[in-house]
Image (cartoon, rainbow, N blue to C red; front, side, top):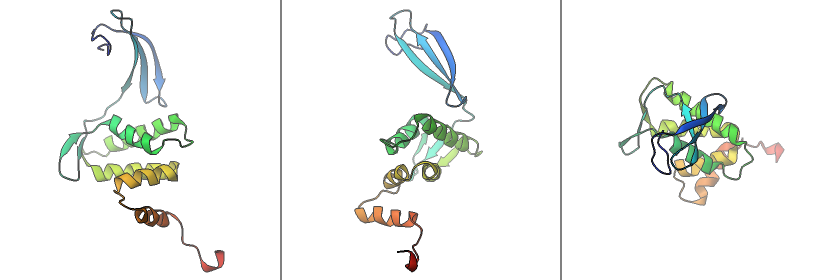
Length: 156
């Protein structure tokens, strides 16, 4: 593994341990050339996925990009970071096990929204506002209205 500080290719593993509910391995590394320390994660990848964007453009699936968008929607929410990691790993496993290497970005968005809805409704609405491209406050109101069950006249 190349050192991110000096570029030396001869780094040493100092510690390895399971991470993210045993779906990855966390390795602490040391560079003897510059003394730098850094962490790497090793995960199983079943297949190389390609995302087909709404404009038809194709790009390699990027787990980090998925994680960033989910973490942005979860900012300042009382959700355990490990639970977020487990959710992300579950989404990636689900995508990899679908049997297809080409996946529509819309399908990924739906899977993420489904997972967020089970964990935190605020994060779900935040993600939906970007995913569904809300343009006005009315868009939020309509979306939140769909989340709430209808109130019968005697319950008001």
